[in-house]
Amino acid sequence: MKLAALNDVPGVVASALVGPDGLPIESYGDGGGALAAELAALRGSLDRMERRLGSGEITRLTVTSERIEIVALAAGKFTLGVALVRGHDTRSAQQTLAKLAQDVAALPHLERP
Image (cartoon, rainbow, N blue to C red):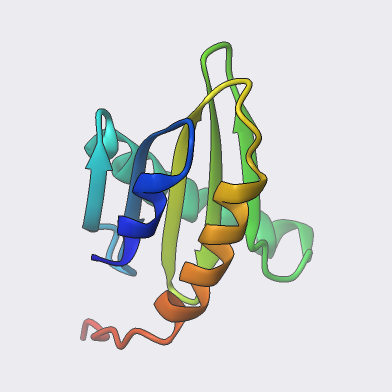
């Protein structure tokens, strides 16, 4: 229930939390499952971009389309994100995500052999 705080943010249509293994831990809203899948794929791209560009850890990414804006955060080995109706102010969602990221980064995760 980490993402419940995003349900009250104006304009939010979906949110998702993805674990280190790429599997969704939580997803809410219409398209939450699809957002989780895309966040898992995005995390792989971010990790690759960090290595290839030598940029250091990429912690935040925003994507804008005709209809939605997606804000994604890397929090330790976890990835969380929110999709908002385009045109809504994303500051409230970004602030809420930043608070959640602190909690999520501290979550334990199992290493696969």
